[in-house]
Amino acid sequence: MQQLLNEILDEIRPLIGQGKVADYIPALSHVAPNQLGIAVYSNEGELYSAGDGLTPFSIQSISKVFSLVQAIQHSGEDIWQRLGHEPSGQPFNSLVQLEFERGVPRNPFINAGALVICDINQSRFAAPTLSMRDFVRRLSGNQLVASDDVVARSEYQHRARNAAMAYLMQAFGNFHNDVEAVLHSYFHHCAIRMSCADLALAFSFLANQGVSPHSGERVLTPRQTKQVNAIMATSGLYDEAGNFAYRVGLPGKSGVGGGIVAVVPERFTVCVWSPELNPAGNSLAGMAALELLSERIGWSIF
Ligand code: DON
Image 1: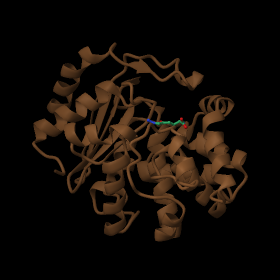
Image 2: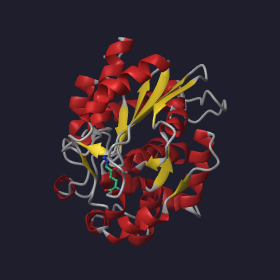
Image 3: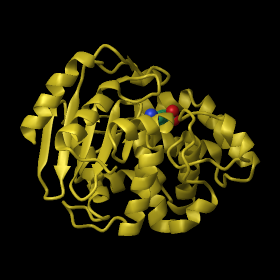
Image 4: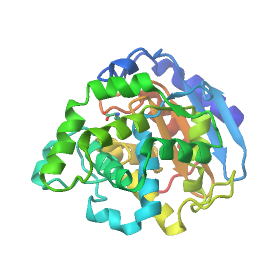
């Protein structure tokens, strides 16, 4: 596996320079674009990493999976009264569908859906950012994982689109807490910094029927695990979910920080990171690396 990861990075490296680092969040635009990392964590507890696989980066929308899992843990199926689990076919920050569909977001991974999930968690936790931090530290086994206040503040200053979505949902009666407080939690979740290795460990329960292989903690039931993987497979890469299924064929979740996590059920979890994005907002080299990996191991869910 170690040799395979090294080979994949060597083959992918020439793609650096063809994408664009996210700059709509000013604090993210300063990230050095030529970084490239990968890590794999197997259900047997073996960790492999290559390139910048141990360097922390802004996880951004990858945090939406952690928020969803927290909400499922405390509210189960009830959450689906507030949002759907259908692909949106729209960019992650699109507003158009939200008015047509009366303030009910299509799924938990577009921004509108993630905001509803944060609203659900805000009703449950006294300190949502601390609950999230502790949850992610436990899942990754890394007690140093933390949110970057500079990035969170930068996102808050440029919150117009996300605020518009949240207030529109409030107007439809689908938002229960103070919008600004929920935005604060949401941006702090997005601004969490983790490495590929941290993320591979943190997502490993999704490859192992809901039990974290490194801690033995049952995070979700096998049925809930299947459901989260299904939503990742159909909506984890927004309007590029179809292309990701076509090229990679695994449940995955991306973030505008350039990370993509993918799950190989019953086998391992992989995370790639390269900050330059394609036009859909997904890591350009990361997509190519995961495509190569699924080809070389000869395995996908399809
Ligand atoms: O709300 C936002 O726009 C960002 N904090 C997260 C967006 C993101 O990562 C979408 N992913 N590809």
